[in-house]
Image 1 (tube, rainbow, N blue to C red):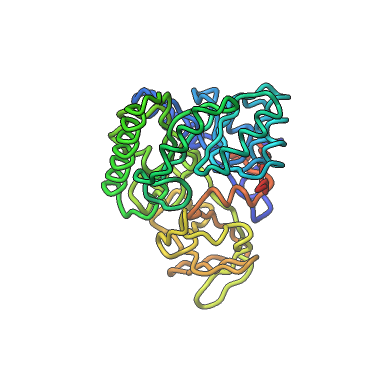
Image 2: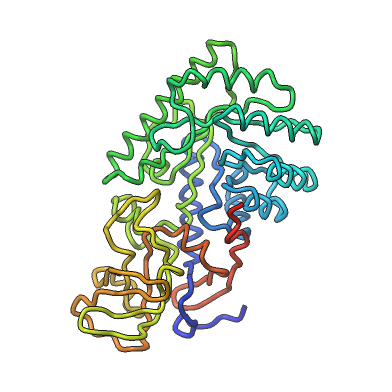
Length: 378
């Protein structure tokens, strides 16, 4: 793509600052290296093959994906080790996944929290003559998927996996997503410590039953940023860190200058209260924060394009309809046709809503990268 000015782009569009992106990728890799853990980033944050390959070039050992068809995009794109961090219980999806992994010689690891999940993975593994490593998912506080540390079924599942020749026991797996509901770094650090303690307790309990645990994998950007407890942890799986967003800013984890992803929009109308922009929920998403958290109670912060670096002059986005955003004027005086740059609350769904990410350096557009797995939710 020929370089052009950011002022010339049609809107709405999603832009990524290349320098900040690379800095963020290196930053998290350094955290992993300094704490002697592997980094397996979650690509649901960006769904972009070019970004995943940069992460691996910087030292990541593979990637984490959510859904079957999302993972297949990265398998076929040349990524050689993928953990699917989602309990896949449908045999047709497992068929597609294993066929693609075998064809492309890709290491696939999976996650379960039920006997149904184990049975279906075992059946499909047997069908193709492969042995799939399987993690047992532990609920450390989000109360979404996973088994609580005191669930009597947990040890039974570990034993079933150990005794099944079609699968192998990979270890323990958790996601402290409830950290996104915390208000500050100290609270998040406590959650990271509690997660570590739960997993260490379970590791000891399982090993006392004569079962070895090779891996203990944890994943969330907030906990990875502030944790000072990595004892017994072998792998981290943050995703959002490639971009960051206003959620991390509001929690005091980073400054707004670290956010790599933003949305470019144009003022198309205005009234006494609001500027109306051409980016609504179909561009910004309706998220006020990850995992349904409210965050600041707005839909992001807008800045006049030419004053983007002056983060003190921000205009909150108060309401969204599908194709329109309502930006509070805050004593500013933008003209119709002026462009604004928006820091979203949650960058992950924003990336999924666009076909391309425009890669920029300062005010120059360098390239556009396809969001290869956008919409792959099966």
